[in-house]
Length: 627
Ligand code: SF4
Image (cartoon, rainbow, N blue to C red):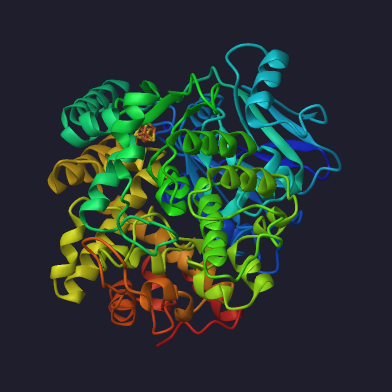
């Protein structure tokens, strides 16, 4: 037997054009080199999606990959990655989600789903352990994610997990999400629109087979050790269950790094009206969590009275809170919960949606957009009714919302009149909420992340201190964290408790570089250590870089928007700061990665990681990998 555990050894290839589903064996070389999850989605995007493919065309391939530890007894092991060419940016796209759906998929016996083609009419995929079929979904088309889940459970019975797109995906909003269990978003890069274009409304799964484990006794012992470590740590075991990620609002306020009014200011005067304590006091029902997670960072909230009575949502987490709160100058907490619920039901990326509205509000502030041009919506800071109307208009592509649904680059191109100056994006994806001017070396990660402005490719405890180190040393340390954070992404584990949320750096390193390799070895029967996982992670990083190079990206695309490089922060501890280290950091970043001056992996580096085929392919495509 090739696979002794961890992997089911089987993938599903779905051909929507011809209405066929095939079971195929998982490639062992792929598993050994790329582990799973984001490792699979990154390599398979390179292999299956040539540069000419339209993200919304039938030739895009949506790749859904849990990891080898997804659905096991390991803590926080409910994660999966969705990959494909991004409808938002046109480059490498992926998004990671928690919840329960990914674990159920794995327990049904699948390591991967490859979605090809385009169905002539709406369908859903029904995976009932080894029985898999495409079924009509005309009755689901036009329904939100909650209603879709309800209808599918009614149809298929109990114990079924559902992931679906909402109306935003159907309407090809370029930042539509794929929603697992209604509340858990694979949100970034717009792959919900890629699924909408394929007319795949949902994937329903019943999984009762389980995940094979090579050495169950060792696996259980290590899982318990990890569980204990996560519970005992003050950040993963206390801060996350008490506040979720919203505690970051305090951390970022302390350094003046909060996105306020489209990154004009770094501190929010009305913080206490929207922070984690306010949520807990007014709306929290209970802390909830994903599959086998002791950290429970989800906030199950409900509004019982007032204008938004009846709203219930698992959230907001920090990015969503800022996107619909300080970023819009909005201190109405109930409206933030409502916005979160709407995005989950329509299937919209909350960060992108909030940032697009912030962009429009700044254009209004500067007199670039008039109220007439926004269909009568008064897009002034803090107008939460206009915010909610905009969400609706984006999801259904109504009026001005139709333009906003195309993403920030297209919207600013169309609007013109200097509006691009206020479009805060990198490679077409808008910025996460931490202002990079506040902590410069750490947030260099936004400039070089493979899917656009992104805080999730690198997150590190204690990383603020990197600003005080010589640049070469800081870049090497940052790259080390880049690899460490990739490990949970490949394994199907949650990166919050396995990387960022730990009292000490040593504890993170013990979890990720000692216990996780031992867990993986116990699951698969393949003996690996932390160095080998770091090497696999680096292989993923070079593969993603090569993918984007083949699409024509160069060093010029590793950028920071003028909001950060030219405008000083206007308030708070970071007042007066601009982002100043972009070009010198790029130089050392490329050096420590073994990339040439254009930021493209050199042949020697690719061959060092067994990627001669990619080196040859880049050269065939006219990409210079020397220098
Ligand atoms: S830490 Fe939060 S997001 Fe991560 S698995 Fe646990 S509950 Fe889910």
